[in-house]
Image 1 (tube, helix red, strand yellow):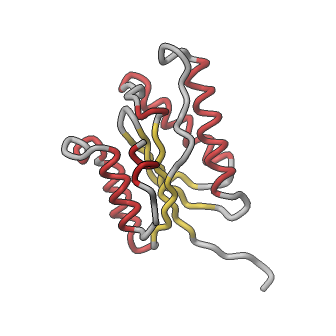
Image 2: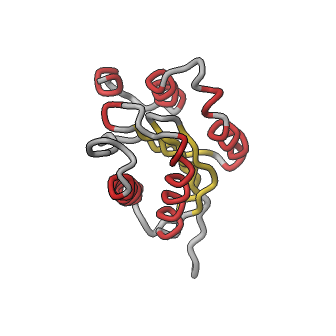
Length: 150
């Protein structure tokens, strides 16, 4: 085959270090735009982005020229630097080390977009920890609860 054809959709979820509520409404949209630029500059397509004060969801049409780990390193590293350069928080902002990356079937993209767009309402009744453990269970990912909750 002369060309490479792929259709990969990945939902990423990652949290602020120690899950502290540091992402404020005053600059949240600027952060989303900045992260979208990082994703696009790495040849991926941002489909949806949203979150809460302590975590963020990205839904990405993933290009195969980069690994998931390399994209997450770029997104988290550059966005942390951007937040710190603008002194949006007291002290030093950093994302938690790990992340979730979940593949999504093309037929489920509309539902994932709705889910991400409705984060504020969704989290009125559910904590990040509960949400993340539900993702791990739903996608059949083995995990140690002490690493998710710790």
